[in-house]
Image (cartoon, rainbow, N blue to C red; front, side, top):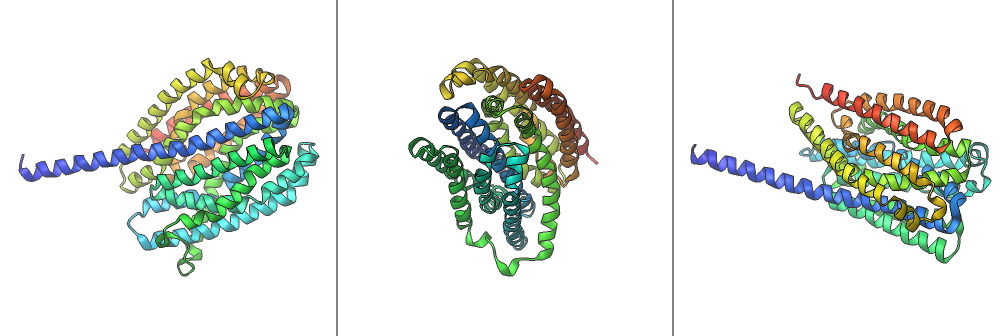
Length: 436
């Protein structure tokens, strides 16, 4: 072997080592970001559960579910579109600037539309759907968050596309810490009850979301001269399929809570909420991996490396399954202690539901780690079709099982769907990563 080949191989090895080192660091930052979100989710429920009881937690859970609905959809997929197009066109500075300008405009417009819709529909949701009139002012407050949520999601999408995961994580962590402290202040110190709990996430969301564009480099921020309607249309098409897919996926996770609130009472919603809260600790790790797999697979797909994509898929899924299995066993063993110390004795009935939900999340964790990667491969309709079918299956199962089995009906529906989706995703990955 010549000296030139040795130097070339050494250089390649060094590049691979640097890349994998950056990947590990990026996964760590994504993990910290999602950990802060997960802890916020848990802490808020502990605060509400201890101060307002099972019924108060049930009402708050429904309102917060609608807030999360806004986090998922008010951006209309522009944040994810920015991640994809930036990763695909990393070397084309001019095109990236056009995408960013269009993405920010689209995010603001979609956020405003979503805000107006919730503001108008708040009385209907409160009085006609949940028969809980006190929910109306809480939903009105929540509606003002969506333009700011949408703007922040666009900024996060830009950070993710450039693999600036430290900035991505820092923005999320600051928001979540702000929410925790303000919620504690309003609920525990000011005794503002549910009103204070909602203000606790609404005020930080508006402030941090409104200021988030200031974190962008001047080189990669909104420029009016670079805004093109044609680029906005292209990103809107991606966003349309993305929002259809994620809406069905999100509703799959929330439909149980929604229908328990519809068929049963806020008390059952509160118990089910505790079971979900603890079981969802598991999904933090695979969700962190997904933040990295999405831009990486977009880059591999651009290079037409189908074999590498398949290996990347299954390696990511294997890591997620092993990690979640270990974490799941630990959480189950600590179940009683967690419920008693984080909540109170009245929430102990949640333990049996928690165990089954943990088993389901362990099974489903490989899918979470690569869930949005079909979008990275321009296969927009694949997750959309899967999630639409799964949503109707989930809805049917819950409508059949919740009236007769109560909370356990929602649990059975969730686990059944997770097993079905695991096999479907395995098959789709195998098909779409085959060499042509």
